[in-house]
Amino acid sequence: MKSLKEWLSGMVCEMKSETITSITGNHHFLKYFNDLIDITYW
Image (cartoon, rainbow, N blue to C red; front, side, top):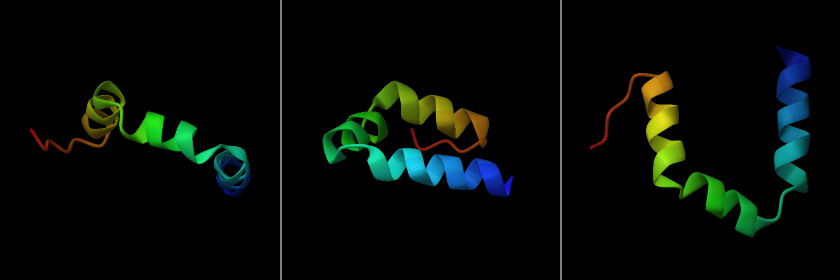
């Protein structure tokens, strides 16, 4: 798990802010993620 967290952190730190905004602002991505962790906002 530690290695995964380090890899993910490295990937996110290398991303441009526009890419992160695009991913996290994506309605379909957010719904899928929320479904995975069983949270509903809409």
